[in-house]
Image (cartoon, rainbow, N blue to C red; front, top):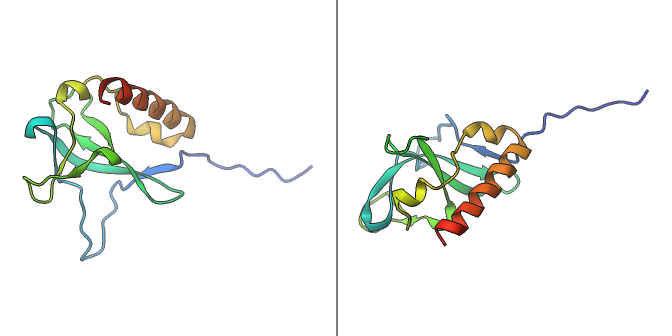
Length: 131
């Protein structure tokens, strides 16, 4: 009988979670995120990054209660430094557009299949409602 290796497959993405940076390293979590027309849409809660290249792919934003789901994602290539608000971020979307996004659940990150399904649905929604 041959050797059987079992691997726990997880999505090739992850979050910072409770990671704390060393002294002297800025942590962007907690920054305010502004939407279209300078409307506050939430606080940056976490990031989703690709394990293979360590690049950030999405911001996880906590709505602060206005969105039933609580948190939502924004693709990193859609976010920019907010010139009006130091150390904060902006994105050209409205709360109404965000409400059309599929509900974000961080448990989807535990499985590559679940994450792919969620990300495909999210990208389709983004293309239909945002671009």
